Amino acid sequence: MLVTGASGFLGGHLVDGALRQGHQVRALVRPGSDAVRLRSLPGVEVVTGDLTEGSSLARAAEGCEAVLHSAARVVDHGSRAQFEAANVTGTLRLLAAARSAGARRFVFVSSPSALMRVREGDRLGIDESTPYPERWFNHYCETKAIAEQHVRAADGPEFTTCAVRPRGIWGPRDHAGFLPRMVDAMRSGRLPDLSGGKRVLVSLCHVDNAVDACLRAALAPAGRVGGMAYFVVDREETDLWPFLARVGALFGCRPPAPRIPLRLGRGIAAAVETGWHLHRRSAGRGRDGGPEGGPPLSRYMLALLTRSATYDTTAARYDLGYTAPRTQAEGLRALHEWVTAVGGVAAWTAGPAASTGSLVSARPAPRTAPDHTGQGDTQP
Picture 1 (cartoon, rainbow, N blue to C red):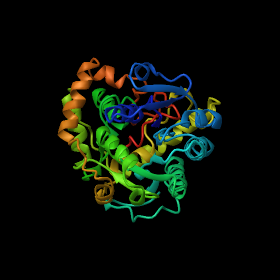
Picture 2: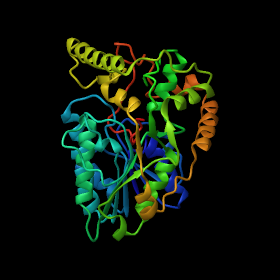
Picture 3: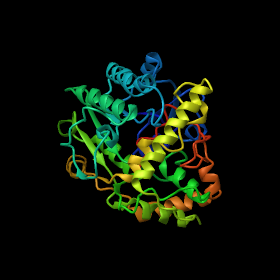
Picture 4: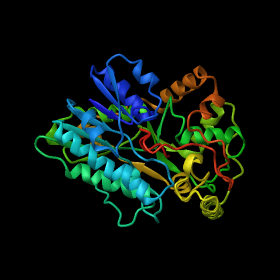
């Protein structure tokens, strides 16, 4: 089984899950990625390659029955060409390599953001009948949707393809997703309550649940899952801002404050994002963000933090047998144990890609954001 993005958060957990099921795993990592943990795992062959290099993908896919494709550009900044190369062209290259190598199953880790529109209100109980938008919120949303459609269209009698759409992936070993960023900001007293007093209901997905769904998709009957896409989330609907306060309290952080009206929050997000782009341009660094990462607050992030969005997993339950094995309470206990084991909240949020910038500061946050992280959709 080939796992792409294996040195990242979700990708690393996919490797672990495949090993637990008895699979031999080939882990694809980019040149320069930290693969020390992967190389220590019995049953894992680590190969170096890149979604931009078809020859390396052909070598990686050789002899693999199934491909779990979690690598993607998951940040919320950069040019369309960057997102196109990583999320669309890279996926097409991997599809071609997998098919040529004789793989029989291709599971694409997509995102509910593939359906995210520029202007829309709260949406509860979204299911797979929801169409793709005519205009997407940003390049990430658009290229994930295009890649997903290519994957679904590639399904055939000898090559079964499908997509899973986990939302807001969280759990141990995540240093770059929304939860460590929120906790870091709470720890520093720099996370305002952006809800405007509104109840923001969301679906999140613990990493163990995302892994369970991906592995089920790799083994489910071809006639049932071929060409399909599935929402994958936790059992619980989450009231986002009280949840963030609860997580922060686990680590001794102050709750988000002060409360900012929604209209003001939108204005702040637009100003911060615009100011960040102007700063980058004046410094001659273009629009990709470079090594300093993206804006500390963007319109996309604000939308995710203020729009209610919950997802119906009936199709995944019926076709994959998915029941979200990890509860939120269990997940929080495991997260607390892991954070304690790695040295506490400061060590967690100061990990490989953690942000230390204020979410409402116009200064760039000093965080790196690799193109192919195996994160999946870690936004809330």
